[in-house]
Length: 169
Image (cartoon, rainbow, N blue to C red; front, side, top):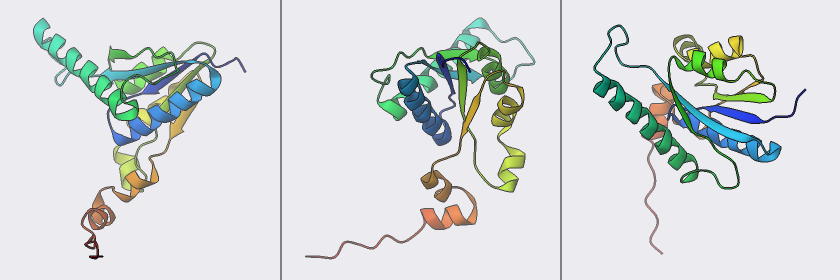
């Protein structure tokens, strides 16, 4: 197996992608590899060609989401790692699987939420990357706190639990 040289981290701004980005940074630090946080974006209506100003606005918004995610994960660019943030237009799965093609590339993605209905309705990007990538793919499950604070009845109960007031001393 070739030495790991580039670590691509799929970024969307979701809590799962922030967790995956942190794991990718640790992997890049361990292998002394370049970390490439990548946000792929699709215009809201790709059937028509919008004005160039509108396309530029969407592109700028994608960069802002990437920088916000880096700020959430690390407070800026991660220290001690060569980092090259990238924003590309296209469907996330196709973009991620398309750029990570060289020897020594590793793709790190969030695996999405657990549960049968959620797996059927979502996680298209993770499934696409796992099926079509030409490099090793590391699918990071969401952190346990994100699973507890999820949606549905269990998530509702977690978010609406009573927190006892502190007792006077």
